[in-house]
Length: 323
Ligand code: RIB
Ligand code: CA
Image (cartoon, rainbow, N blue to C red; front, side, top):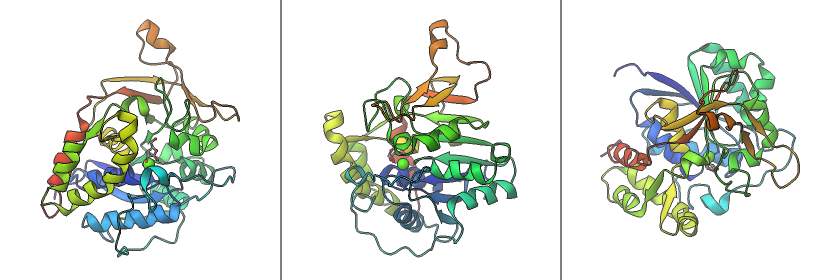
C-alpha cells in the first residue's frame, strides 16, 4: 500500500455524523488515522469511545487505531448536556450495536494527544468534531502543543450563519465555550469549518437509500445510523435529509474538499452568560474591502464549499470494505 499523505489524530463525540466522518477517513488509503480521542457532547465520552470502537469494527479496522476516552465535563467542570435528541439514545441513531471487539487505551484523551504530538513533532494534523475540551486540556498539559501539531481542523461555530443550539451558537462551541476560546487563541494554524459551510452540504434521502441498498456493510451501517438523524433534520430542511457537518471537516482536513470561499481572521468566543453565549465572533469586516486575510490571524474560516460533498461520501462508503 502507498504511504499515507496525511496523518490525522481525530477528537470526536461519536454521534452519527462523527461516525460518518470516521468511516469516510478510514476508507481513504491516503490518510493514516493515528488515534481517536473522545469527548462528551452528543453523548458521554465513554459512550463515544464505545461507538468509535464499533465504527472501527464496521470498517474492518479492529485494533488498528488506538482510542482514548477524554473529558466528561466542560473545562470549568460544568455538567454536560448531551445531544441524544439529535443522535439517538446511544449516539448512533438508536441502532442496536454488538459489543465492540476492541477496548479504549488507559491513557486519557489529552495525554494521548500530547504523547502523539511529541512522538511525531510537526507530522500530525488534528481534526476536532466535538466540543474542544480535550484540546484545551492538552494545551494545559503541553503549552508547546501548537508547535508540535501540524495544524488543527475544527467542525464548529457559525460565522455569519445562524446557530443550531441557540440563535447565536453552534453545538460544539456551545457545549464548552471556554475550551473553544482557549483553542482559538492558541498560536496554531486552525481551519474552522462552521455551519456556514456544513449546512450547505446536505445528504438527500435518495443518497441515504443508495447507501442502504449497497453491497458494502459499511454503507449499510451508515444508512441505518443516519435514519434517526434524518428524522431530526426533516423539519429543519423541510424534506428528509441531513447536513454533513463532521464529514465535511474531515474532507477539508484531508484536502479533498477545497473551500470555495474562506477568510483568515481572528475569532473570539462569547463566554458570557447572555443569549450569545457560545457565539463565534469571526472578524469578517475585511470582506467589505475584498480582503481574505487579516494581518496576524492564524484561523481560516471556511464559508462555502461546492454543495456536492454528499456524493463523495456515498461513493466512498459504497466502495468500502466488503463491497
Ligand atoms: O453542530 C454540529 C456538530 O454538533 C457536529 O459535530 C455534530 O456531531 C454535533 O455534535
Ligand atoms: Ca460531532
